[in-house]
Amino acid sequence: MKHTLLAFTILFLVVSSLQSQSNTIVKTSSKADRIDSLMQTSYKDGIFNGVILVSQNGKPMYKNAFGYADKNNNSKLNKTSVFYLASLSKQFTAMAIMMLKERNKLSYDDKLSMYFPDFPDYANTVAIKHLLTHTSGIPDHYGLGIYKKGLTNNDVIEVLAKRKKLDFKPGKKYSYSNGGYVLLSQIVAKASGIPFNEFMETNIFKPLNMNSTLVYNKSTPVIANRAVGYNKAGELDDYEIFTTGAGGIFSTLDDLHLWNQALYTEKLIPKSTLEKAFTRTTLNNGKLTNYGFGWVVSEKEGRKSVYHAGGLSGYSAFMIRNLYNNSGYIILTNHGEASNIQEIVTALNKILSGK
Image 1 (tube, one colour):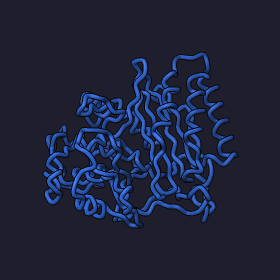
Image 2 (cartoon, rainbow, N blue to C red):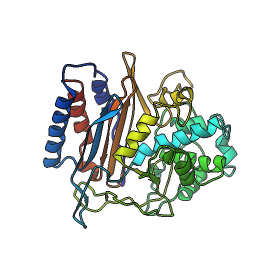
Image 3 (cartoon, helix red, strand yellow):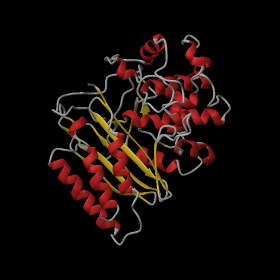
């Protein structure tokens, strides 16, 4: 199956390990050496082909690249290689929505029917906040069997609009929906009056000097220094669709670090607005999910971390931000499920916690 997602349930366990990180007698340089040993071994054992950046106190303390970028050209990955982010793109889509909310261009309570009047009547019950938090009842379009080369937002919207009912009443439960985030990218375009890729470039990427980051769509922009995707068997499994919102963004370690640090400031939106993205969602019955706006939220002993994972075609990605001490890491790979991110994350967390 082309579409893959890293298991959030397993990641919750490893995040708990990372959250135990505290002031430790293990020196930063020692940690960097141990991380390098971990990554070198993972590369040699064939379970990692990609790039990694680890930060502490807001600054990179380890960054490296391992393996090939393009087998056909026999080119190696480097620290500035450009990767497809898969579902890490959702945090950017959520930011666009929050920015438009701050500009009074939309409200989180706006109904889907305001932007898609041709949808069935259930669109009168689905709000933007439901789409952001995966509580809308809109299905994940990948589960509807519509994946094809060249898949577009219009293809997804056409299929979703034909469904007679929601999977459940909005706000009743959490159910991860890529389809919901495709709709959000279209809402950004409708509310702002410009295409989604232009909004992202003008309002997020350029202001943050994320010069190697872009939205990939039907215009098929040229991506220099791009890592080509391969599957577990080492066969070509490159990115080949044009949907946005749920995915669609290519970026680098350095650009994502700029993004990460910008989220500790008010360069894009006030901190009070951003906090909503890092707050667990309350369902209709009062129970909490573990998802905010484009981020999975984990809290333990008063310490909050936010993270996201994703994968599509030959790409996998993971990013975590420890909000309590401005630390975390970014992992990007182009070798699909052959890169065992889950085990690497578990080991990495132990190193960072001084274990």
